[in-house]
Amino acid sequence: MADPGGCLEVRLFYVRVSPHGGAAPPPRLALELRPAGGDGEAQAPAIPLPLRLDRHDAASGEATYVSTAAARLAPPAAAFDVADHRGAALLRGSLRRCPGAKGGSPAWEIDCVPAAGAAASASAFEVYVAGCCAGEPAVLTHALRLATPEEAAGALVRRRSGALAVSVNYLFSLNIISRFFLMSCLMLNGN
Image (cartoon, rainbow, N blue to C red; front, side, top):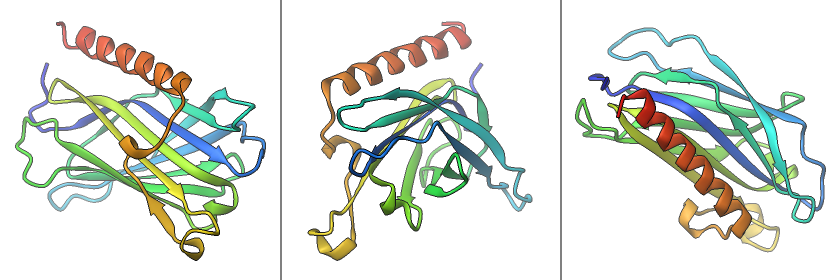
């Protein structure tokens, strides 16, 4: 059944972290979604979701974390924070309805930035959110890379997901996750 209000039903939240110089990845991350109240409503309570370590590439140090816990986000927006297992903030971001999106449109967008101090533990992040909106699959991605000391004296270099170089294994994994997600959405919607 299609959602007439344009809620985003998050089914998968995926974070890829590229640590500095061979640092061991945290055993888990913590994700907290904070839905915003719509039409003058108070902000809804925060939704904590665990991100389990799914894969660690020993050669590159990259680690991927996944949560398949479901969360329903009503328009207009929700904020999120990702922290390591000790509670140190790594990322802050938002999922929001695209400006001008119609009620039945699956138009949501994602934005995120590294938290203060995240540069000490990682050189790049990628966030992948998959879900359904108005009965249609919705996939949101955002990638960013922290600048090296040689680049702009510590400034951030932001790139969208299409510009970030990724390995063939990573692309294969993302393809499998996307197919699983799309099949799940079709089964939930009775198609």
